[in-house]
Amino acid sequence: MEELIDLAIVLGLVLGLGWLADRLGQSPIPAYFLGGVLLGPNGPGELGIVEPSEPLQLLADLGLIFILFFLGLEFSFARVRAAGRFIAVGGSTDLILGAAAGVIAGILLVDDLLAVVVIAAAVYVSSSGIIVKALSDFRRLADRETDLILAVLVVEDVIIAFFLAVVGTLLLTGDASTGETVGTVAIALAALLVFGLLARRLSRLLSRALERLEREFFIIGTGAIVVGIAVLFEEIGLSIAFGAIMAGVLFSDSPVRSEIEERFFSFRDLFGAVFFFAFGLSVNLAPIFESAQIVALALVGVALAIVAKIAAGVLTGRLTGLALRRGVSAGNSLVARGEFSLVLGQLALAATVLSVADRELVSAFIGVLVVVTAVLGVVTLQYSKRIGRAVEARFEPREGKIET
Amino acid sequence: MSNGEVQETRLPGVGTRYTFELASGGRLVAIIHNDGRREIYSFEDSDADDPTSVLELRDPEAREFGAVVAGAYMRPQVVQELELTLGDLEIDWIEVPSTSPLAGHSIATCQFRRQTGVTVIAILREGEESIPAPEPHETFKAGDTLVVVGRPADIPRFRKHLFEGPESEIAWDARP
Image 1 (cartoon, one colour):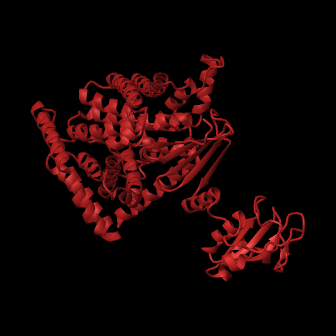
Image 2: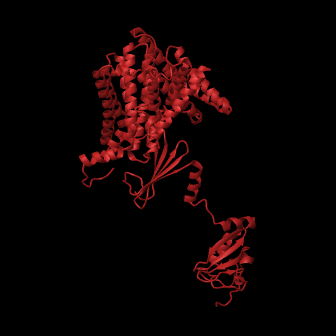
Image 3: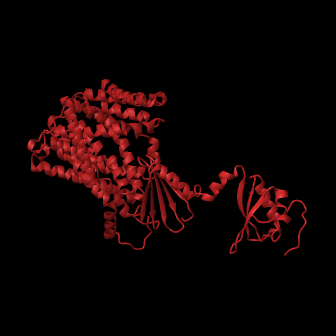
């Protein structure tokens, strides 16, 4: 009973936070997380309204599974190709600049290589959830640079799916011994290969079975497959994250994909909100504020993360012949980090391979990164066209040149 | 760019965008979201940064609106009612072309009913009073619109009769 009361309180808090963020024109994702930080045992003044608990963690795990399952559902090379002319240039420019900024931020803060890689990935990946919704809300879907923004997000999602599957598994399994790492990577690659070979047949089989089921059994059947594959992957020495993504990939090109999306959006949103909140509860931001030096380094890291995105937009715009203002606008629209960075932060916090100090520092930095860039990113996206026009007027006063 | 070409672009994670370059120099953009919502953006000129207006429609609204815009939806109320009472007959409005060999003759002379099975039920004349239920001796002239009723298959025969002259010989009366 007590657990249910706690759960009711959490859902009430999450609802309030999400609603408040929405009213302020912000995304609810950083609000759920920040709410967890402030109201949890590590919050300022030790409010401790909500304690992490096992039932809450179970729901949060389901949230993680469904967030990653949906990431897998979006995973499709056909869709990448269909995203148009910006894919190659936009995707690679963004990867190089974003990862470089992330590696520098990582080196500034931690020594461990794996910890640096996790920070790099969290800095690299923009939030497709926050950005796509904001583009739609601010009526930006008809703009030319929107194609560039969406293409970059598509590439990022594919890369981060790979990354979460492999590095996420490294983080969550075993100790840091080389032998074990090699073993884990070998199992991961073997699993990918087997899955790749069987995927089409398995997908057809499962889709056909699901299609025959009535609505309620369709939901139960899909849920069983998703959770089942996630757990199966953990059992063979990989991770739940890997399994959840693969379950999504399995259905990404199947005829039941849109029905699964339709029926499971609500699951993802409900459990996902709990996941962000629960991660906030377990994170301790104190390590960042331990010394003025770390605060300064973390701020440099966040600043680099923002500059890298804007630079990627401008550079891609240059290379693909977009007007300067559109490149600037695209870059400013890509600033927000969100769900996948938080997933990385949670994986880092639970990573047995990392030292306790690194775990805390990495997850705290990612927390700060997401809160700052998500809040700022929605604002820069809202005003990105104005910023773009101002920059163009400053650096490229019109000389009657051809507009593109 | 102003020949009404439509450009289709996929918006991954959102839906599909259709861009129409208008003859007026403007640009219309329709976005069909994956969840069925439609958005229509209009830009005053092709390079404008901000839309002058944005329209958001739900799926059923968009379908009805689209049919109206396509001209496939609205029909005059009167035609709908007539259709109910006419059963398998059809009613049609046919303008008499200036080239019609029958222009200037009476309905009886033209033998519409005998040769085509179609009856003239009214003569509409611009600028003058129309003639409902015309007598057989009533004449019509080029530019008039004949309201006719008959079987759907017979209407094309009536048109041919009116436009090109009768198939079999008729007794021409003197021109007025």
